[in-house]
Figure 1 (cartoon, rainbow, N blue to C red):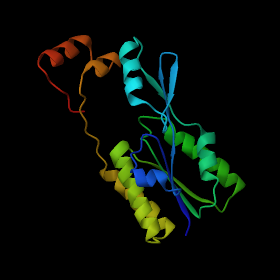
Figure 2 (figure 1 turned 135 degrees about the horizontal axis):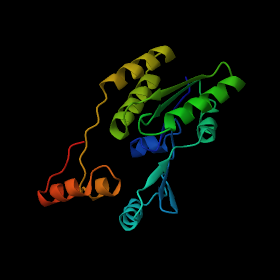
Figure 3 (figure 1 turned 120 degrees about the horizontal axis):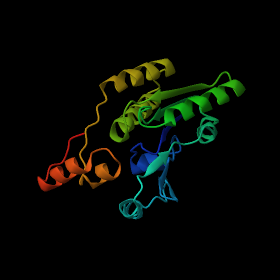
Length: 190
């Protein structure tokens, strides 16, 4: 069975998975002022963070286009699984769903599933790893979809930030709260 597992670039993949043609990541775009950064193998995180710190505006992001997903879905695979960043955080899921509809209009027999991970990064990556394991074990398509949908019910994201400056800059916390957190050396658990 040929399969393809796709995610947006918020997904954490191992180096081996990044080299494997069965896996694809569709990049998001990050904007800092007038500067655009494509979140692909050319992304320079240090440069990006430097630009964020220097820019008075809050950084923004743009989800992948439906066309980017359509190109990835229109492949020779028997089964395609796409696990996206939470729809609460990005339009990536909607873009992938639109692309699925386009491909399925042209190829009604296509088995393409788009899953809203309701998470990001590590949780999203664990779903992709499980999808790959099931595909290698020849688990039936419908069973894979059901298991992945069940997995997302247990996803939880907790994180902290090294500095509250990014939260203040992005308007997530007020300046007074930011000063208090900095003065007390508190790091919020989000």
